[in-house]
Length: 136
Image 1 (spheres, rainbow, N blue to C red):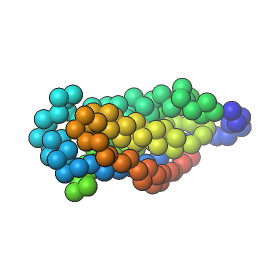
Image 2 (cartoon, one colour):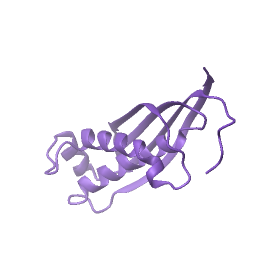
Image 3 (tube, rainbow, N blue to C red):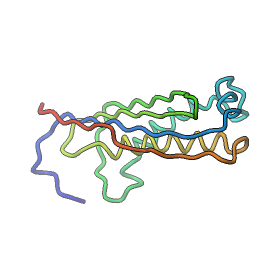
Image 4 (cartoon, rainbow, N blue to C red):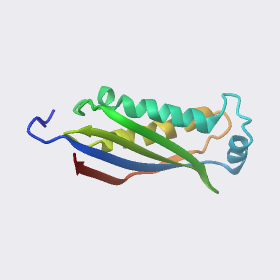
């Protein structure tokens, strides 16, 4: 890992988003909460939070960070579901990997929950939207 001990503590945030393309029938099943595995959007949001918290366990050179906030939001649109993750910490290094991980895990959870009813899902457009740092 990179040595960040000489860097000052700062309030850091990152926002990431991604999209999963779904068949229109799958979108309707999610809207009507008719999937056998449960409430897709709520479970995906919780999974995203868990994924963001475990980033340093899964990406070998990521620093473990003292995360102070993770928010994962899912929104159904005409082509599928968009996931947006916001993560905040006070630390010496950025938190963008945690935001990207939260988004990715939420999307993978949607895929897992819907794979029995939709064989043509596409996960894509995962990207960092913004990152900030502010002196304390």
